[in-house]
Amino acid sequence: MARRGERRSERRRPARDRVRTARAGDAGGVAIVVATPGDAVEPLALQRPAGPVVDVVCAQPGTPDERAAFGRAVAEAAARGVRVADEPWVIDAEPGKITASVLDALRELRPLLVTTLDPDPGHSSIDLEANRPVVTEPPLRGSVARATVSAARTYQRECGTPVFVRCHRAGASASLGVRASARHPLPLRWLVRGVDGRLSAYLPSAAGVLRWTEARAGADEWTGPELLDGPDLLPGLDVVQDAQGYVHLFGLRRRKRPDGERFVEMAHATQYQSGRPLGPWHSAGNPHGNDPAKSRQAGFPAAAFDAEGGLHVFVRNVGHSISTRRQGADGRWSAWQHLRGVMVADELVALTGDAGVPEVWARVRDAAAAVRWHRATPGGEWAADATGAVSPAPGSLSAAPEAGTVRYRYAGSNEVCVQVPGAGAVSLGGPDGTGPVAGVAGVDIQGWDCTVLVRSGESGACLVGAHADGRPESGVWWFDAGETSVVPPAVAVDGLGRAVVAVLGDDGRLRITRQVQGDAGLVFARWTVVGEG
Image (cartoon, rainbow, N blue to C red; front, side):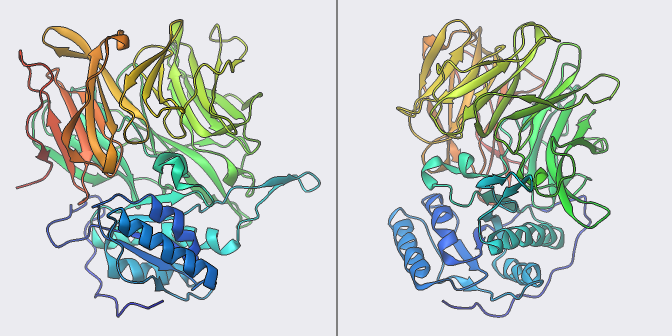
């Protein structure tokens, strides 16, 4: 194990609301920051071949067995084409000084992506007498993860370039894929069209939400990335649009009680006009209130709107079932309601079903199955449908444009499927790659209204396909769009009616391609790097 040399001199901090994108010679690698070398084994197995160089930073040198396991993981990664730099940097941080030590490492390594473990490690059981979750993970794991999230936030504000953080669930196998292994999911619908027809892209970074916005509807000129004002969010985001076209952002933030104890709550903000300042962030609460132990065990929120404009929020609670509440048009929140039934994983999809009544799908915790909670009427009782018709691979559930419809990868073959209400599952092909599929309906392709789909293929490739609206059984032809992405690719329809696909490159820069309308089928123009030139 080796310690790296002196850190580079600190760069002057730019204005906080403007974020510089990386240029040639700037940051661009991956830093895995963990407690000991053994904790880096699974994150290493998730790295992309031919991707950015990977550095590993450890708080402690670990045991001989851990170091041997790490050595094997490095060799296996190298055999897949992953570039792992040198030996791990062991920082030997003293208690209370971990954040400063990690920050020094980030200043030296200048990464674009920072991977650490869960800052709020999951519990293994409940102490019934004390009524609190029992966490058996070594305390250093959570301490290093929290320090890394904080250090990455500071580092991004110092350097002015985007930095993205992934928190890997301790003990989660790399076979689950990036999304199912992550504690805080990235949004799928992160490219949206605002009320004025302009597109905006929203992604969570270490220092907060980044936003890119078209200068004019359908134009290749964009502003951003801009770091939106807001609280210090944990590294995840959900992006939802209401019937009026307003964009709603949901995340998690850590807060301090009067007695100094910290808890986690959901936060919500609204974007009313494209490119204008974001509305204030408001608390959406937590089903466990400000309980410092239980609130930190809750999952990431999923949200949907009903036909009356009410906002429904769903979250996996400490008991691994679902809790939900509704915010009415007057801004008042209902009490939390517990949806009992099957124990679920931290993978929820909220969508609007028939008659504008929201519903939520969740992957079952210990089986290749999903359960759906729905109501027959807006004020009716919640009912669970666990018939087992949907068998999703971990991390692959997503909402489709049609009411009550979900997409997923079939656990038995990894192929993409869509579950159509009343018609069962339809295969969309595409067994390569991992993770969910995003899509947008209403795209004109040679006079036909079609749904355009995007997904991640092997090594992060952006793959695009399409089928006639409402007719997935007609089949999908997938093709490589010619770019890779470090986040799930997104798709939207711009103000001129063209499909637009967006990815985030290894340099942290937004890239887009627009549909070329005409008689040649689904054709896209050359990729444009936002901010180039």
